[in-house]
Image 1 (spheres, rainbow, N blue to C red):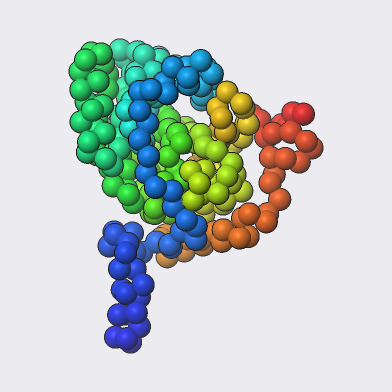
Image 2 (image 1 turned 30 degrees about the vertical axis):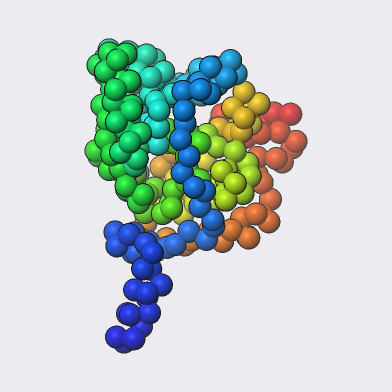
Length: 250
């Protein structure tokens, strides 16, 4: 028995101790990149943030979290959208990025924004607090997706939603195939509510809602990358994308 325990420990030696109760992700992880100011104008020219916030139905007074906030592209625009009665929590695991973001928040006098450092397996969000949690072009960088999503889920209000914007390409190339994304979210008790491909996003938009009880960590069935890649993409049936209420458009 001792030998089995040592073997398991050795196999998980490269993982945080707080994540070892959860399955390991069966996929490469993209290296973390920085979202610099230089591309913000290009993203605004595509109307990216406005489109995502419209799709997510962000309105004044909401409380939202921007995970992997980086240099603050979404943080600043969410702060303007939710207004003085709303709140934005900007989170990242990079202390240097958070320092730069803090300076920007002060410079732009964004009094409705707070900043928090998370970890690779825990976004460290307060329970029952958020109408929306945004994961924009960062989910493919999460090294412990099952632990991360499992610990994220309690942060949602009863009607809270998780918004993902990403790119349909291998996880080692700064993207994630939709079928694999859907599988990982489903494994921890989320359901896909909306999926839309738009050129303005340089990728796709997906919206998830909690479904049923949150599974115990030992009961989570990990997604196999090869099986997910071979699976039929439900969003491509009928020649269109999955839209609100499950309808499809061509």
